[in-house]
Amino acid sequence: MTKRVLITGANGQLGHEMRNVLDGDDRFEAIFTDVAELDICDAEAVNRAVADNRVDYIVNCAAYTQVDKAEDNVELCRKINATAVENLARAAAACGARMIHVSTDYVFNGRGYRPYTEDMTPDPQSVYGSTKLEGEQALMRLCPQSAIIRTAWLYSPYGNNFVKTMMRLGTERDELSVVADQIGTPTCAADLARAILAVLTAETFVPGIYHFSDEGACSWYDFTVAIHRLAGITCRVKPIRSDEYPSRAHRPFYSVLDKSKIKQTYGITIPHWYESLSHCIEILQETR
Ligand SMILES: NC(=O)c1ccc[n+]([C@@H]2O[C@H](COP(=O)([O-])OP(=O)(O)OC[C@H]3O[C@@H](n4cnc5c(N)ncnc54)[C@H](OP(=O)(O)O)[C@@H]3O)[C@@H](O)[C@H]2O)c1
Image (cartoon, rainbow, N blue to C red):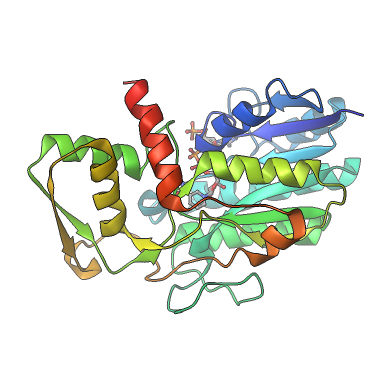
C-alpha cells in the first residue's frame, strides 16, 4: 500500500533532497509544500491539508533557520519553530498520522566533550536552539507517535549554506579567517533525506528522539580547508578563536552527535562528512 507523505518546507535544503528521494518512488504519494502552498503557522490550513490528503506521515522540513537573526526576531522564530510544530502535531494526532520532525544540535549547550546521546539534557543557548527545543517538546506531548531527528551543520547544493559561502569567499579573497574552536559534524542534506527514507520504509516505526549527522567531526576551520581543497581553491585560511569572530547568537563549542541509536534502530549506514562533501562539491561544480 502506498504511503501518503506530506512534506513541509519542501523548497529548503532538506526539502529539496526529500523531493530527490521520494519523487518517482511508487511506495509513496508525496505532497510537497512550502510556505506558498501550506503555511505551517496557519493551524486551519494545516488541519485541512492533513485531513483532506489522508496523510500517513508528515515530514516537517520547514523551519526558521537564521540563527543570528533569530536573536532579534524571537516572535517569528518561535511561531515557526514551536507554535507551527504544535499545529502540525495536533493535525497529525487528530488523523492518526505520524510525524518526522527535524531538530538541531543547538538544543545542547556545547560544553560537553563527548558525542551527545539522545538522553542527555538539552540546554539551548540561543533563541533558535530554545525555540527548536520548544517544538520538540510540543510534538512529544501532542503526537508521541513521532520521530524527532536532530541534525547539525546542514549543507546541500541548494539554497545558502556554509559550503557555498566559503567557495564564494575563497575565490573573492586571498585570505579568510575561520573559527577553529567550535567542533561539530558537517551533514549533507542528501544523507539526512536518505535516513528519513529509511525511517519511512522501516517495517516497524519506532517513535522517539534520534541523532543524525554524517560521520566524523571537525572545526569550521577544518571544514573550510576541506571545501577549498576539494574545490581547487587556493585561498589562505587562518584559524581563529570564537571570541575573535563575535556573532549575535551563541554557538556551541562542541556539538558532535552520537548516532548509535538511529543506526541500530533503522539499520542506517552513514558516510564520513569528507566523502559526502566531495560529492556535493562535484555537483556544485557540474552545475556552475
Ligand atoms: N541548516 C542547518 O545548518 C541546520 C542545522 C541543524 C538542524 N537544522 C534543521 O534542519 C531542518 C531543515 O533545515 P534546512 O537547512 O533545510 O532549512 P531551510 O533551507 O532554511 O528550509 C526551510 C524551509 O522552510 C520554509 N518555511 C519557513 N517558514 C515556513 C512556514 N511558515 N510554512 C512553510 N514553510 C516555511 C522556508 O521558506 P523561506 O526560505 O521562504 O523562509 C524554507 O523553504 C530544519 O528543521 C532546521 O532547523 C538545520
